[in-house]
Image (tube, rainbow, N blue to C red):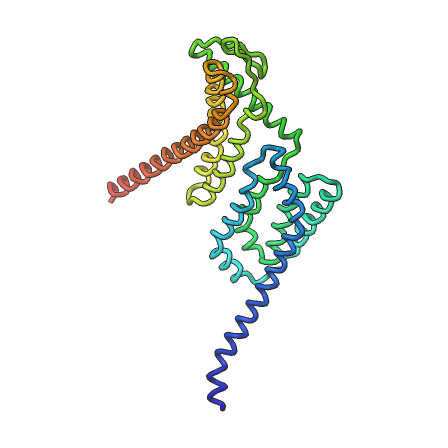
Length: 310
């Protein structure tokens, strides 16, 4: 009988450990489920109408991509969680409470911007309070990435898109003038060979800019490189998006002059957006390729100098 007890003792210990893990996992899943229930009304409104009203089409994939980044770091997160002794952090609890109060205020006052933005401090505080500081630091970028799904106020969106529209109009005028193409511009309105055109909000290039920025941030998060290179790659998206949008407006203008406004505002109008997006992607890849080549050349020169000293 004693021998049987000794033989079953290791199995009993394993069962106790497994039972403890199952109970803990159930609690964590339950807490995350409550978070999902809390923010479900906000995301329901965002997915059904808010993002469409703003033309914020990139926001639909922000949450899945953020969850994908968390899954990609799952082993590192598990290691950080296992090595953390103190998990219930008071400062994180305060941030969590602040996020919850912000959410309630935004929901009661019908401020969708505030209700959605509250997700950031709420998740950051929740992660630190439940899992500890190490896990919280690892989750910082995926949580901040959710800022890209926060719907900006219409007034703020106008302040961003209006300068982009003027930059595009100025660029179109200068490029047409460079090739001695007849053009007259007044503000956002310009006339090309008798055809009057205007750069409206849809032609500001903001959609391409914010979509490419969303993808570029994920890319620099995944790659292993210096902070300077990552910053240059992200910042390069802005001039690439502006140049791409200027080329798009030029192409649409030429189509309107030679083939009519119906064709310019039809399928080719949307297809040109896809082409410009590919232009930005190729430009982004080209900048990275040049930077990588310079890094390799520098490493090769360093190795040659080291061999010469030896």
